[in-house]
Structures are given as structure tokens and as C-alpha cells.
Image (tube, rainbow, N blue to C red; front, side, top):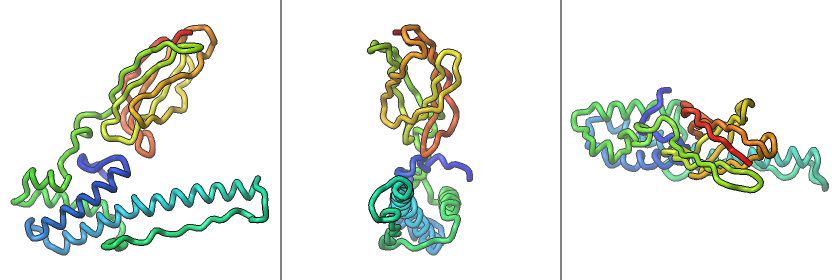
Length: 232
């Protein structure tokens, strides 16, 4: 499915967007030249997706963690309980939320294309509904960053200041001297410090870094590779 420039990448931000869109769209029933049943279906789609990406997904992840712990308990634990207590309780549907047919997000995007095509649509409506392109997605295809080498013990460290531009975090890969690119590191704040030891203690080494965005997984284009020298 083609990515939409108004729809957030990070899942928590998607939940907020879906709630906002559903609440604002209800105010435009009868004001836009679109059938009321279709508008109400879109509201139901948005609320259903917000529930799945929010409370339902949170409980699923909690249960997955508990199940993993139960397997570890069964393998190496003690006591009389065979595998520990694991119970999945599906979170109750909030008020106004009902299960919807598959394809809810596709239907929302299709409705938004229709909204933007009706005669009485303008940028003010787009701003209210949250369907204008987000500044960050228009201007930043990759993270922006600055590196500097700072003193440290027993060797220098690399300080990386970066901007996520609305994404959950960035994915950092590093190559030390002529070695392979490492498996990568996820950073979600605004500063990351590389304090890894030198490959050969006491000998300066070249480090190459590259970055891409991270939202549940690394994605998008890599930045240009930047090179620094780290010494003892």
C-alpha cells in the first residue's frame, strides 16, 4: 500500500492520528458533499484501527512476553507450577468501537482522496482533519546528525547528536577500520555515545557511520557515510 504523507510512521502517533481524524470527521458530516453512511463507516474504521494499534496491540505484546517467560520457567524454573500463570485477556472494546471488515486503512485513504476532491474542500479543512502533508515527511528522507570525537577513558568516544524528524528513532551502523558493518544499534533519544573499545587497544582506528530511520524496524534510505578517527 502506498505510503501517505499525512499518516504518521510511528505506531503511537498513528493511534493519536486515527482518534483525531475520527473525532474531527464527525463534525463534517453534512458539511462535505459525501454520503453520511460512508462518513460514519470511516469513523468506525478509524476507531477500530486505533483500538487494534493501541490497547489490543499492547496486550498482545504483554502476553507474548509472559509466554516467553513461561517457556523459560518450564525449561529452567523451580517450584510446582508447570509453566507459570499465563492468561491472555483481550481488552474490552471501548464505547463506539466495533469490529470492522478487513481493509479499514485502505478505505480511510480512499475516503481522504475523495474529501480532497469535493468542491467545498480547502486547506483549512485539511488542517482540521490532519490530512495535509506533515512537514517532517516532506523535508527529511533520512535522519540528520552531527558527530564529534570527545576525550574519554581508556579511549576516545564518538558523540552523535541526531534528529528523528517525527520517527520513533534512528538505526545506526558502524564499520571499524576494514571490518564488516556491525549489526546496528537503535537510538530513540537525541544523543547517542559510541563508547566501544578500540579493536586494537592503544592504536587509533577509523570508524564509518551510516544512519536510517527506525519505526518498529529499520527502513528508508541510508545517509551518506561519515568517517571519524578514534584514538586512545
